[in-house]
Image 1 (cartoon, rainbow, N blue to C red):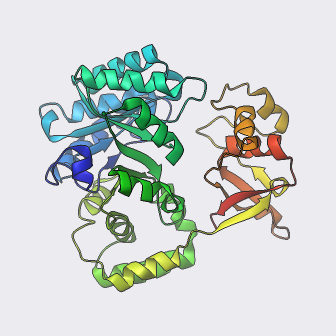
Image 2 (tube, one colour; image 1 turned 60 degrees about the horizontal axis):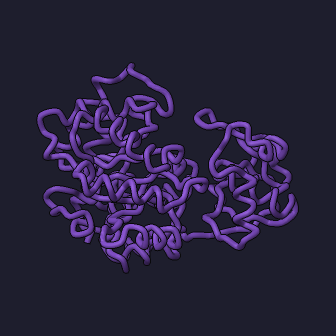
Length: 373
């Protein structure tokens, strides 16, 4: 089904693609390994991983430049998906952002254009009008969304009319299977491809020592790595394309051959039972905000209310949505090693949601969380 959704054949797009966040820098430009990254992207295409996902914000635009260099002379073999940032969601800003991406990618068309996150300060209709216009003028082939809820995807389709959304990019891995509740069923029903980012949860699976050991036991029976086993499990769903990032040729080749074995039904069941989605409810005052070298972090309620980093949505805007009854994906926490005698946690993902919850309901009301260890 993924190939019909994207308008391509299985020979053109594999169920395993290439994620590129961190290639050429995270949120700032890093040219120190350009030759290596270009070679890896090109090799990935040669190995059949022709679906390449990126974003204008990755490496402050440099990641798109690296992809442009990698596909020079073989553009028709690559399926390039990029995303524009929420601050560029107004009609004219979408157009300008795509023009800049086209220049960096050294191409005259983008296969799949996606919103990175929704900008709640810009009417969604305006954003979709710009994306539809780009399809009509041939600069974009297909439209997708990223980190949107089912209600938001439904709203998007109303604005696009006969121009369908073909993909929804969401976090999906063994430790976070929350998309299985309603987003994945919706995508199957609407014939929308789910692009699974962070399939290895950015390496956090390594902290799940006992579970990882059991995965290794299954993997060794097939002569594959744990990573290949995880990708195979994800790709068994015909609606899913996984986009792992590979930082070495060894990992790239492993990713490329992750589908080259048959996973027995009994082992599929074992893996699924080993990693059930378990949402817990933890008082907000039992959670401490952890530092993040890649993102701006509010450490106190006052900082969150002031929103000096101009985050969008702001914690206060998020609080208003919670008060209106909006549901949300659970935040992620892990045990606080400095508080071994108490039930305390470190917040590792979902900081704006956390502060929005505190603003809306106070420190004592339990917030839904996924505990990572």
